[in-house]
Image (cartoon, rainbow, N blue to C red):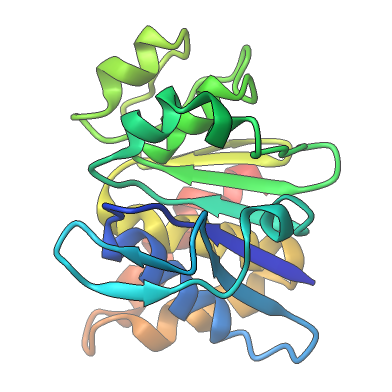
Length: 198
């Protein structure tokens, strides 16, 4: 099982790295969770340099793909050569995107007729791409999910864990990372956000 987190220069650390951490908490030895990108090294919006663990080609063959946001997502969306490499298919993959990453799903035609979640900054871009935006943190239809807000990455990760492993595994992952004294509230909120879409 390969889960790829598509990450581009200017990426938001919260999107990619929270998902990476939560997905790895499942501890399933058959899972491979990787940061995937167009180059060997990518730089975040705040200057953090990360080595990619998978290419875009490998990501397109993955069982599940998450797309985080970043300050250069509109540049990625406008790069025809780069976008042509993103051969994603919800018939064979679970797909998720967060904030401006939702714009990439929209531009790839993977949100046709499906409303989506995104952040307030990215909302006009996603709407301009012809996708209605919901005022909520998470939404999924069949194998495609979107989330809005940096900390909604936990919902995307929990949805993937619930779909690929179990709801109990999602509960356990969220419980582990939740703040002390607030664990039950965090788990309840996360599961309430994703459960209608499982």
